Length: 141
Image 1 (tube, helix red, strand yellow):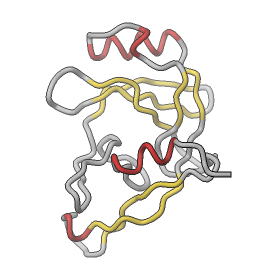
Image 2 (cartoon, helix red, strand yellow):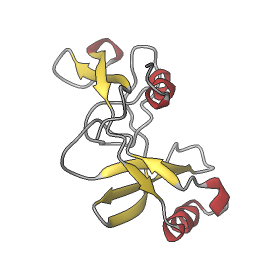
Image 3 (tube, one colour):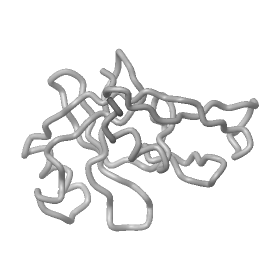
């Protein structure tokens, strides 16, 4: 399910082998945006994973942050850890099945050395900081 006109950039490797800032190119990307009302039990499970925070620290309404997709799990960032690992709690869902999981950050960077905001080994394209706010803003009428 696409958000109304919300677009962002993803990456495409321009050369074979491991990614380097020179081999990563920004291209337009549509974001899934599937909505989720995060139940109280899942919010508390997220807090338990990072051992800090309160239910008020976790947004009840989430949306899938991955590329537009028809199959597979949806994923939304829920809460950061307080350590320096960059790990974060993500909620994954497909239909009526939900799970929260502590995930390492995606290690890829774009040419500006911005880190991808998604988790390690995510499907689809990357989500760069400069595109995140644009993707969530309402589309012009």
